Amino acid sequence: MGKQPNVIVFFTDQQRWDTTGVHGNPLDLTPNFDNLARAGTDVHYGFTCQPVCGPARSCLQTGLYATASGCYRNSIPLPPESRTLAHCFGDAGYDSAYIGKWHLADSGPGPVPPEQRGGYDYWLASNVLEFTSDAYDTVIYDGAGEEQKLPGYRVDALTDAAIRYIDQRQANPFFLFLSFLEPHHQNHRDDYPAPVGYAERYRGRWIPPDLAALGGSSHQHLSGYLGVVKRLDEALGRLTDALISLNLLEDTIILFTSDHGCHFKTRNDEYKRSPHDASIRVPTALYGGPFTGGGRLSQMVSLIDLPPTLLDAAGIEVPAQMQGRSILPLVRGESAAWPGEAFVQYSESQVGRAIRSRRWMYAVTAPDKDGWKDADSDAYFEAELYDLLADPYQLRNLAGYESHREVCDVLRSRLIKRMVAAGEDEPIIEPAPTHEFSRGIRADQIRVDIRDAWD
Image (cartoon, rainbow, N blue to C red; front, side, top):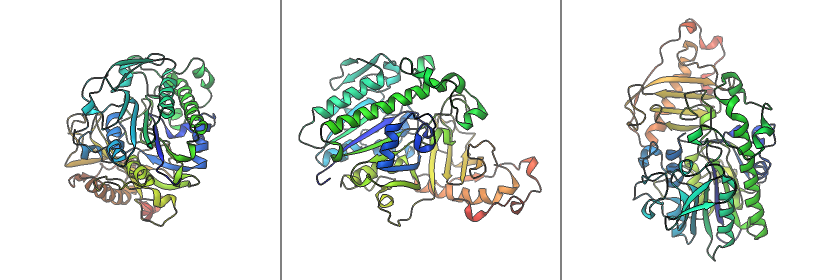
């Protein structure tokens, strides 16, 4: 890839990591994603830094944590002075295009005024696509703000639009952000409408262990959700086929990722906004350029790391204000220091913070704060601790157990450092009340190694 590469972001909404074959899903839902990950770079431990639609999008567009950009919850638009990926690529001579769901304007669910489009040249989007369309009724708005009704199932309609854009490209390299609503639920019916006949393929065939244990709405919704994931993967295959037919595949970098996962009403009364893997862990892979043949990464990679990664891979200087780090040194096998955990801010349902390492998930919350009105807090309380070595599906909360007090102390220190590095003031984090059943059990009796507290 000697010239500037084209860059495509294939962005899904609310997709769990374990819907993919590379993460062990047995249903062959994602052969195209799996091929992309195996031939390219499999970011095996990919996490969102904010499990809410708008805030996660603000992080990916700006490279800033949601509290730094100000978009810490839904319905807060990107500040007009924000520098986005579209600006960065545009300054480097790229044409930029946005197709699909935006969710970063304050103009209502439909058309987005030009000044709130994040600097993209070509525009075909709705601010909140779930409120302007349905599975077989794709209504979206063009650059003039005019309504466009696209034929076909919504995933296919947006994919067709992306292929048309690529086919009509000009001489410049392009940066295309293709943002799907799927497999997010359709809000007005609280359902996951799959293409005709797709939900039936997966009904009763497989259920993730956390959902098998906790239930939630999974028995009602999972088959439709999985059917939607299957159609998304077919769309990825169609997009890749189009690139091959236009002799562009080897000149293009593709990033596949999602804004957050889905816990199917098992951790709270909706689908995300929690620190558990079902909510924060997402499928992530890159292909093309330096990512081809990159193998599987074992480091914890955050959504906040993806904007600098794309710019770095395209040979564009990464803005100093971006708070993530390019993963290219990891792909090259360089021994660069890398954080041992992913840092997560979560809002709306509560004001919370968490870190997730290979072994531990540790979360705190500010119960006296309002998750809709307050971006952060000066004081938090320990809320959750999971030992992922013994409890990979996060079913036994160890916060407040005397046996894990030293572990919590280490993780509390790590979390505070990450909060300060993200631009937050150093908070107080109060220990969880001692769990009655844990009194008298020492750490050495259950073989907790404090040295491994963040491994």
